[in-house]
Every structure is written in structure tokens, then in C-alpha cells.
Length: 563
Image (cartoon, rainbow, N blue to C red):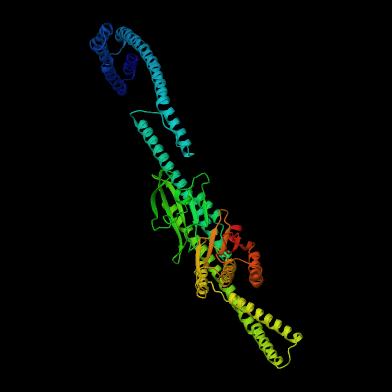
């Protein structure tokens, strides 16, 4: 193309002689030389065996330098371009052959490049597929698993674990997540155990407070310390979890329990309990090791005591290797204090009723003394005056007999009234019935040489004030009759408890026994004793003994065992 442009420009210059065409020819020559000497046309000669193209290229350069270029420059000075046409045509043909060679090389290389591109594309696609598979297997699936595990863990399922074990970031993340889940699960488990333990403690504390509240409420509402001890001690056993608990209740003067409650009905009683030996349990030791049925056991003892008075003991029996928890000990101490308070209130209530009863009896005695006794004394004086007045007249049975009978009747009534006043003035202090009986024996025995012995085996029984008054009156009346009429040398008084909790009082002497005269003389006292026995719902017997003498036997069931 540039060759023909050169020819055209040369022809135009020859025709017009314009300088611009001349300059254009020179410019085209420079451009042609620059193009033909372009290194791009020679760079692959050293890489490939292109001898034919190299030869053609060298021939073209030689032909240009030696033939075509000089002819063009020469044609600028001539009038005709004909000398240039033939060499230029041959030169263009050579150029065309060289371009075809380059084109063939280019097409071959393009085919090779296309093959390379296709191979590269296939390899790239294969590599991309492998990368996608690897990403899916090593990144997507682990991330999906991690997401699922995290989602389930967020919902509270801390048993989930990440199953990827690798030495990369995901492996580190999986191990960290598993360790985190494991720690959280352990913390949750520990917290759940603590919450469960605290819940149990709160529940137990609530049960303990409820139990103590109900016991205290029952004690306060009763105003007399009345309490269902069996129900209380069974509730204590249920709340504390201690199945082997004994509750022994005693009177302040007694040495054996009047009530023994055992929470474990299948347990056999210890030898001390069978033999009614309570001294060991009432000792100051709170925790001792002892033998029960040839087995070594540990006993915790909690005294029921208030204001220096012992009302009983709570005994907890454990196996030798077992121990009691602090809250169990505190519960039993609190229950023992509540029971001591209830029993103390009951004792105070009994004492108050006893004082009230004695005050009423003293008031009655004082009223009888101020009214009836004075009237009888006045009548006795008047009868004496009548006897003295009729002594100055001749005896007349119609006058003396009624006056004598009237005097004897007044004397009998006055004597009975004095005995009744003495009875009403009997006093039972806070030391109990046994002390009152001893005082009565000492007072009455001073008037006689008869020996009086007392066998008191009921100190452990909690008699009511009314029962104490009646028992003391029956004992006093029977003892007074024995001292006044038996003519014996000994009188024995026994207070004993039968196996069925029945109490029997026996007053016996070794005297002459009973006859019709003595029974008639003591008819009033006998009637009083029978009425007292009837008021207690007991049985009364006055009879002679087979070995000589008389005896009074009174038996009844105390109110405590009836309830």
C-alpha cells in the first residue's frame, strides 16, 4: 500500500511540482523504512526456525535498499514514473509473499493459541470445579454444621458438638466451640445442681418453719400447753428424714416416762426402755455411743427442759457411722424447746387450776365456818342450857330422851362439819401429790403410835389438779379411819400403776378389821370416799383383809391416758 502511495505521490509531484508532494514522498519513505525495520517483524526469528520467512524478509530489505528506494528517489528528479513501476510491482509481490508467510505463521500460532486457550479453559473449569468441591467440603459444610450447632446451642441444647477436626482456622474454631459448649454445659449442670440443692433447702426450711409455726400456734391457742405429741414427733421425723426418734415425756418428779412415742414401729425397744431406765437418757451427754440389741449405735439426746424442770427427752438413734446434719440438730433443738414450752404452760395451767380449786375450797370452808359452824355451836350451847334447865325437874323420858338425841346429833353434825372443814383446807403445793401425801401422813401420824409406810410409784403420771385433790382426800380419809379405829400397829399406803395404765391406791392396816359398829360410825367418811371415786370414774372397795385388818382399794384411769 505504501509502495503504491509512493508511486502516486511521485507522479503527482512530477505533474504539479508541488513541494508538499515531495515532502509526502520523503515522509512515506521514512514510514516504510520504519515499518520494514520494525523489530516486531524479526523478534521470532531467533525463537523458531523460520528460515524461509527470514530469507524473504532479508531479500525485501535488500531489494528496498538497493532497488526500490533509489528508483523512487530518482523518480523525483525525472519526468516519468515508468522506470519505477516494474520493480515496484515485483517488490509488492515479494511483500505479498512475505505477508502471506507471516499470515500463515500467525494463523498457525492462533490455532495453537486457541488450543492452548481451550486447554486452559478446560483446566480452569476443572480447577474451579475442584475448588468449588473443596470449598463445599471443607468450608461450606463445616460452616453449615457450625451454624446448625450454634443454632441448637442457642436454643439450650448444649450436648451438640462440632465434628470437624483440622489444623486450620475452622478446626481451631470447632475445638473452641466444643470446649465452650462443654464448659457452658458443665456450668449449667453445676448451676442446676445448686438450684436444685437450694430449692430442696428452701423447701426443707419452709417445712421446718411451717412445722414450728403450727406447733407454736397450737401451743399459744391452747392457752394450756395442750399438744398432740404423737403427731408432732411424727411430723418431725418426716421433715428431718430421721426415722428412729423416741419421745419420752416425764413429770418433773418422775423417773420413768408416762408417755413413750416411737416413730419407727418396726424397731424393737432398747434394753433401757424395756427396763424403764431413763437415767442415762436424762443425763447431760447429748451424743453417746451405746449398744442396742448387741449393735453399736449413736444416740443424740435433746432434753425437754425449762426453768430447771425436766419434762422429758427426745432421743435420735443412728447407726454408728452415721452423723446428723446441722439443720437436723437445730430442728430437734427447736422442737424440744417448743415441747418444753408447751409442757411448762400445761404445768403452769395445772398449778393455776390447782390454786383456783384450793382457793374455792378455802372460801367454802370459810363460809361454812362462819355460818353453819357458828349455828351448830349456838345450837349446842342452847341444848346444854336445856339439859341444865330440865335437870332441876323430875326426870321425864319424854323430855330427856329427845334432848339427848338432839345433843348427839348436833355433836355428830359438828364433828362431821369440822372434818369437812379440815378436808376443804387441805393444801397441795407446787411439789405435787406425793409431797402432799407425805405431809398428810406426818400430820396424822403425830396423833398415833401406828407406823405408816408409803410406797409411791406414780410420780411419773401427770395427774390433773382435780384428780390430785380427790386422791389426797381419799387417802387422808382412809388413813384417818385406820389410825382412829383399826387398833393395829402398821398402816401401808401404796400408789401403783397397772400394766394398762390403771392407777390403784391401797390403804391397808393390820388391825381388828371392820364390824357393823365401825361401819356405822364411819358411814359418812365412806360415803364421801365413794362419791369422790365416782366423780373420777373409778372403783372403790372397803373390806377386811384375809390376813387381818381392813383395806381401802381405789382404782381409776387418769384423765391423761383417757385422752
